[in-house]
Amino acid sequence: KSGSGFQIKKLLIGTQFTIVIALIACAIIMFRQINLLETKNLGFDKEAVITAVFDFGDETKYNTLKNELLSKSYVSSVSVASRIPSGSLSNEGGVLPEGQTESRAIPYVHVTFDYFKTLGIVPKQGRLFSEEFKTDVAESIILNEAAVKYLEIQGNPIGQSLRCNWPKSTRKIVGVIDDIHFESLYNKIKPAVFVINYPDVYHMIVKVIPSDKIGSMKAITDISQSFYPNEVIEFSFLDTILEQRYQKDYKTFQLMGFFAALAILLACMGLLGVSTFIITSKTKEIGIRKVNGAKVFEIIQMLNIGFVKWIAVAFIIATPLAYYAMSRWLESFAYQTTLSWWVFAISGLLTLIIVLSTVSWVTYRAARRNPVESLRYE
Image 1: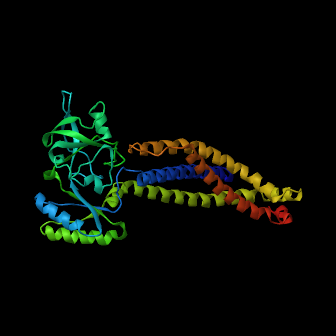
Image 2: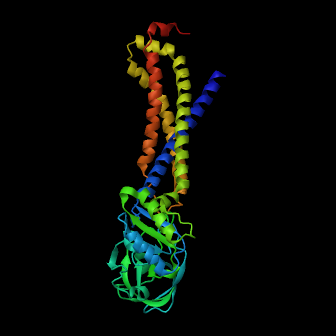
Image 3: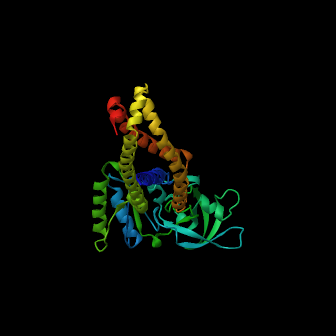
C-alpha cells in the first residue's frame, strides 16, 4: 500500500516537473516576444511625441496655433494628419499608376507639410513634402516601399504620375519612404500613399524636447485649449499609445511568470517530501555505504540519478507541449521571435538545477550523520 502511494507521489512529482519545464519555456519565449515588441525599430521616432484628436476648424486658425506652439522653446515640430502610427490603415481610395488601366484600392494618409519631420521619417528616394514647393499640396504624393511594389510601378518611381481619387487629382511621386510599422506588429506592413489634404486631418502631432515632456505636454494642452475652448483636448504620448496595444500580451506574460514561479515552489515542496521519504527509506543503506568508505559526494550522486531520469522524461514530454502552445500564441503576430532550441534547453537545465540542489541538500544532511546512528535505524 505504501509502495503504491509512493508511486503516485513519484507520478505527481514527474507531472510537476513537466509543468515547470513547460512554463519556464513559455515564460522565456513570451519575454523574448515582449522584448521584440518593445525594441523593434518601427521606422519612426516615437519618443517625446505627443498627439491629440480634435476639430482644428479652418486652416488659418490651425496655422495660428501652430506658429504659437513653434514659438515655444520646448516645441521642435508640429503637424496634423488623418492617421498617426498606432492606428489602422483602413481608409482606402483609388490610385491609377500611369501606363496601367485598372485603379487599385490603397490606404490614404492625409498629412500636412511637417508630418514626416515631426515623426523623424526620412526619404529613401526623392524628397519629402516641403513648403518650398507650394505645388506639393495639389500635385505631389509620397509612397512607402510596399505601395511601390503593390502598384507594380516599374523603374524609378520618382516623377511618375498617379491618378488619385482622394482628393481627385493627378499627382507626381516626389518621394518614397521605408516601410514603417504604422499598425501594430500583429499585422504585416500595408502599402500606403501620403498626400497633403488639410480637410481630412484630425490628429495633432507635436515633437517636444525630451528633458521636460510632462511639463511641455501640459503647456501645449493649455495653449491649444485657449485656441479651441469648445473642444476637449487631451494629449497623450505616442510611445504610451503604442505600448497600450500590447497590454493583453503584457498581462499574459505576467500571469505566465506567476504560474511558473508557483509551479516551481509547489514542485520544490513536493520534491522535499519525496526526497526525504526516499532518503529515510535508505538510511541503513547510506550508513553501510559510509562504513564501507563511500564519500558524501558518491552518496549524493547515487540518489540524484533517479531524479535525473525523471527530469529527462519530463523534458521529453514538456518540450513539444510548450513548443505547440507558443507556436499557436505567436501566430497572432506578423513579426515573431524565434522558437530557439536553447530556450527549451535552458528550461530543462534550470529545472534540473532546482531538483538536484533540493535533493542534494536533503541527501547531504542525511549523509553527514554518524553511520552508527544510520545502522541502528529501523
